[in-house]
Structures are given as structure tokens and as C-alpha cells.
Length: 226
Image (cartoon, rainbow, N blue to C red; front, side, top):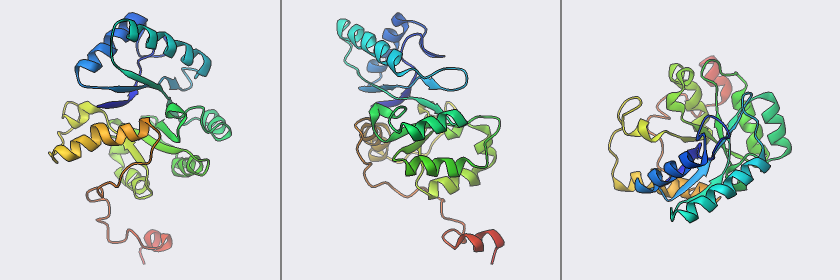
């Protein structure tokens, strides 16, 4: 399995506080069948995103994992918060915050208030060559209260990343069972493609995303109901 969203690097944000904890987290991940992890420190108003420091901590952790014989492949990315400053910097430096310097960018929205301009900002990121991946929308109370917003983004090909415990029913409603092929795509195929910077394979159409009979009509008909 591949984990694209992990606060594994020691002493950078609200994740692992030290190297020993990072080693223990990595060992636990391998025991659970995870082969690849992207370390994603925050870029937010609370935590500065420092590429040089991140590279240093990554090198230290890779050395420690090799020393302890823990076969876990590490990459780096970012838990990207959509502040004005972050958006401006990402548009100027499209590979600064992305996963393994690919096109993919993990984007996190605030829990309390979501700007009405988020859709436009996501579009700007796409125009700059990035592919936004919205992190754990199933845990965001604002999106859960207004699911039409995320449905609209999904109709425009936004990718999402969900927390494993949500799929297992430990956070939110239990997921339906879709079979081994679907589980493999969710846990290995898709995230490995992202880890390696490749395009995703063809996906199943999301259930009920186009149930509204007006979806697909011109925007002015959808707004005015004509």
C-alpha cells in the first residue's frame, strides 16, 4: 500500500516530535503493508514550509531507516493550506509544494469557513500545471454540510484523498464493499501513480455524481432553472 499523506518527518510540525518516533511510525507502517510514504509537512499560517530543512530531515530519516533495516520508500510533499500567500507562491513556483516535485498537490481546506472562490483558485492551480488533490473531505464539517460544492468540483475532475480509517468506518459511516480490484486501486494503484508522478488509470464514475438532471446543461440554465 501507498500512503500519500503522512506527517512522518521528525520535529517539523504537529506530526512526529523526534527521530525515534519517526522510526517507530515507519516500522508500524511496514508492518501494516505500506511500502511507500510521502512525508507531507504543513504549509500554513502556523507552520512554515522550509524545503531545505525538509530535505535535511528526509535524508536523516532515510539513513535511520536503512540502519534499522526498515524497507520503506520515502518521498516528500506538502499539506498545502490555501492561504493567499501560499497560492501566490505556488503559482510562482509550481513544483515547490507538490508531491515528489510532480504535478500533484495535496490541498487542505479550513474546517470553519471555505471561501466561495476556492473553485476558481483550484482552477488557477490547474492552469499552472498542478493537479490538486483535496485531502480528507469526509472529515471537513463545512463540506459535509454542503456537499453540492464538492460535487461540483468532482464534476470538474478534482481528485480527493480519504483517510484510511474513514474507509474502514472508524471515522464516519462505514464504506460499502466494492471488491478486491477497487480496494487495490484505492490503496495501491492510484496512490502509487501519484507517488511516481504518472497519470491515473481510467477510473469508475463516482456514484450519484450526475443524478441531478440539470447537470451537464449550460451554466445559465442551471442557475436560472430554465
